Structure formats: structure tokens, C-alpha cells
Length: 114
Ligand code: 5GP
Image (cartoon, rainbow, N blue to C red; front, side, top):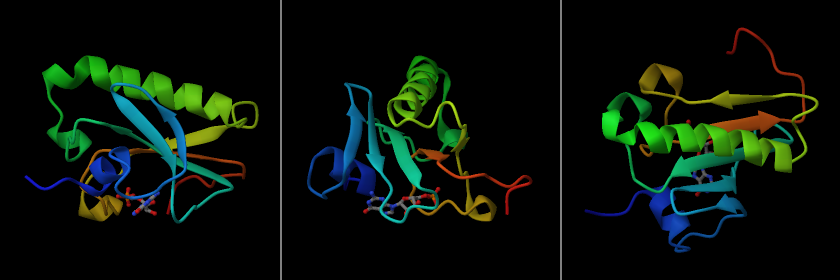
């Protein structure tokens, strides 16, 4: 099977500004930032989207969220606040079929989202 875009970033086949990496997850700055801070954190396992994750991914998914918070802290956006976004499917605007959590901060966010 061919690698997903985010697997290629993890393999350093496509360059990206890496913010954090461990055995299970990789965080890197979004190429088209929607906020002053916009980082994606992804599992190294190429789960297509959250709706396709299963019980065996439970521990990794917990790790992914805890690391998202740790990355946000390291990027200095914890005190002002940040938003975590997971787009699942067409109506949500999912463009890359490899699960990713957007970490967005550095500006005031609107609610409800667009
Ligand atoms: P989605 O719309 O699927 O939730 O988000 C995909 C995100 O991946 C978008 O914010 C987009 O800017 C980002 N992205 C797409 N291609 C690349 C790339 O080659 N490098 C990086 N760093 N981000 C990318």
C-alpha cells in the first residue's frame, strides 16, 4: 500500500517543521495555517479518520490527545487558549485521509465554527 501524505512527512520524504515526535505520534506545523499557531498531530499508524478507529486504538488515541495538550503548552498557547479540531468526512472538510488533530491558537476563535 502506498504511504499517506502524513506517513511521508513522518518518513521525512516530504519536509515539514516538526514540533514533536515519539514512537506513536508526530506533530508538525500546518502548511496553510489558519491561526498564528496551527500544528497537526497525527498517529503514525495510518488510521483514515476517527470514525474508522477501533478499540485497539484506544490507548494510542488517549496518547494523541494528551500529547496535543503537551504540544500546545510547549507552543505557548495554553494560557490564552487553543482549539483542537478533528474533521471527519466530507461535510467537515476532511481533505487528508489520515487521522489528524488540528491544534489552533494565537487568536480569538469564533463559535459556532464555520
Ligand atoms: P483536513 O482538512 O483534512 O482536516 O486538514 C488537512 C490539513 O493538512 C490542512 O490544514 C492542510 O493545510 C494540511 N496539509 C496538507 N498538505 C500538507 C503538507 O504537505 N504539509 C503540511 N505541513 N500540511 C499539509
